[in-house]
Image (cartoon, rainbow, N blue to C red; front, side, top):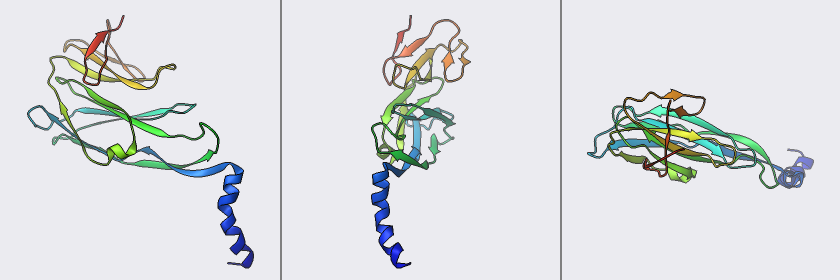
Length: 187
């Protein structure tokens, strides 16, 4: 290294700060492990897990990931991160939070919202409760509301139609008002 470089290299962090930009390593999706069981402690095979990465910034965005549990009731998702350059100003850059929802025919759906990366450091052990109806996780991305899951309950003989980001009942919809799948009618 030349003599000039010896003096310039320590100035690089200062120059970045004065420019108002800086690189930031960001987690788009944390590594997460799920173990899903019924009330008797038996693994629940083929439970659908909907995992969502979303931003809570001026320009909100989200990405849905769906996967199923194996015969041992287990499922995992790998970590995905990237580098972004952020401007040192309010509400600049993408900062992610996560939600997940688990559903399976014959069980109540269950979900958690607004999770931080540290909450995925251990395997999440989930117990699904039996239900005579089928609860489906529905991700809501309305403009004026925060992102969240709604639980749609349907009887076994009702048909569901998949739209771009949600499930729709042909007649009437019921949406959950709690994370355990309790429902109230939508009029």
